[in-house]
Structures are given as C-alpha cells and as structure tokens.
Image (cartoon, rainbow, N blue to C red):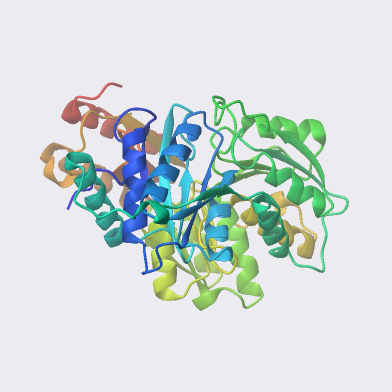
Length: 456
C-alpha cells in the first residue's frame, strides 16, 4: 500500500507545509508514544535535531505529543542522526526521534524514528504509526489519554554530546592516535559542527574546519557532502592529509584525498572492505551496496574474492539486508557507510575514523588506498517531475530503456528510479564509453520530460 506520510527515510517536506506541520508533528509524537509502548507508559523517548531554524517548533510539537501520551522526553538539541541511534540504546529509551531533512536545504525538514535497538523502524511499524497519525489528523482519534498526573515530563540532557564523543573515540583502535596528522573537515553548518572537531582533536590531529557556524538557514548551503569543492580547497591551503565532508545531519561522509580529489562512498567501501577482508574481519566476505554503486566497485571486490550484494536505494534497505545475512559492512555511493560492528546506522564521523584507522595501520595515503578501485564513467541526471507513476506503466519509457540497454550491452548499465524524498526521477547510466553514456542519459531524459510533463 502506498505511504501517505512516511517515505524512504521518515517524514520529509517543506517546513510549515503539509506534511511537515506542527499539527502533524504533535500527532507523530502521539503515534510514537502509542505504537512503541511496551506496557511501561513512563519509558523515555530521546529527541534530537539538526541546526535548521524550523527545528525549534518541531522539537516543541513532538515533546507536546509525546508528553500528552504519558511519555517522558529527553531533549538533547543539535546532534548528528547517528548520535541519536547510539543514545537511544545507550540510555535505554523506548525510541529515538531526529528532526532533520539530512542533505536537503534549510527550508525543508523531516522526522526520523529509531526503535529501542537504535535501528530505523521496519516498514510495518512505520505503517502502524502512519495509520494512527492519519486517524488523529482526520478526526482527532478515539484514543484514551493519561490522567493529569500521568502525563509525561521533558528535560534537557547536558552530557549527550560527551557521551557520543566517547563512543566515537572508542571506535578507533586504542593503540593508535592521529598525532602528526592534519584533518580538514566541512561540517555543512549542520549537526556535526561541535562533535567532529572535538573528536579528531582529542585523538591528536590538527584540524582545519569550515561549515561550523550554523545560523538556522545556512545548513547544506554550498557546503558539506554534496558540495566538496570548498573542502578540496581547504585541504590544499591547510596542507591536510585528507578532508572530511559531512551532510547536515552527519550520517554521510564524502572524503577528499591529500591532492584535493574527491573520494566517494564506493571508494570508501572498497578500501575498507579490502582492509577488513585482509584482516579476516569482513563477515561472510560480503559487502552490501545499492543498485546505484558503480560497476567498478563490483569488479574491484570480485578481484579480491569479495561478494557484492545489491539492494534497493536507501540505507534502510542496506541495513535490512546486512542484518538478515549477518554482514558487517555496507553502504551507498552517496556516503552512507554502515559499520554495524560500531553503530546501527550510517555515521559520517565513525566512518571517517575507520578510514583513518586503515591509513594509520598501513602507513598509506588516502590517494594510495582509493587506487584499488577504478570507477567506470557514470552520469546521474535528476529530472524534476510533476507526478510519479510506476515506470513499468509507461510503455514509451520502458521501450526506450530496453533499446538503450541493448545499445550498452555488457559494457554498461542504466537505472531509472524516483527519489524517495524529492519530486525527481533519477537517471543513472554507466558505460566504458563516456560519449555513449552521455548520449544514452540525455535521450532518456527527453523521453522522461515528454512522458511526465516535467520542467527541464
């Protein structure tokens, strides 16, 4: 059944417009309190956010909804999404909620929910919460509310930042330090702006920081994981050993090597998988990635006896496959890297620490480590759309895709999919022949524009 509120990564939209309204946030708080209860009505829910201006109103709305249903709320303020996943487990909470729209501009916001185990909720549980929310929004719901003496309390947690810093430092081998290294980082004016510099400094590195002055409206604005060009310049001017670019909520990592060249999620996964395989620590000799990962990653892993398992796009689907198969490394080209031995969700800072661990142990520069993977040329076009009918129900587009697949043969591949969070259709094409690749992508774009009536 089609979702009406929840997408591939929680609820997301333009702040103060449906579905991201204060009224909806109150109802979601009530839904979380109702659905995720285990009989103990006073069990806590922990609540964090990124640095968006609209986070204030949604924070208060969620607190109101949760308290109205008898839940106590621990409010931690701006912290990365993976920090909330960790703190939910660490503080024995019934659930964790993050107010964030990740890499989107500040005008957007979203709500993500973690279960008591720190993992994102299964689809069936999200559907249950959605049903509750829609019922409340449509008619007020007929649910019983606690008596006055049983409503919840909310309190600020002052040591949440310190708890997360200690957790991150413990993920780095205790016998090593970052003494003598210079690490540049771009915090995207987002949730990592305090945590990231502290972690790397405390481990001994000299840090050069940008994107660490959030004002509520500059999150992801030309900075962060989607815009690593500024970080590349900082790496050069600071003569850093590497650069780290996080997104607004800190669950993505894109790196820059010492030469100022970008290192994406595929390359990060390749070098980490190779290191874990050599150490006998890559569970079942398997890496889990999505259909968007470059074919070059698959070829690199195959040469090293590592199996690559592909899933649908979305880190939640990567996590689900990893948990089913008992795998410990996975992720996305976009920089969501999952080390399930350390955290239950993508964690940009923890991922950076794992790469730095490889660098320290091997004595190799990032440019050397990334060289194990050769990327096939790849183009990704985001086409704005006004609607999202199933691709299989558009005969003209299906026929065009089949023709282009025959043209590419075994020297490339293509993938068309809708964004789960934005009104866009993504066209991805890979091919050994870059000219052919661009032609295929542009021809498919024209068909999409004609079929969906979108603006170019």
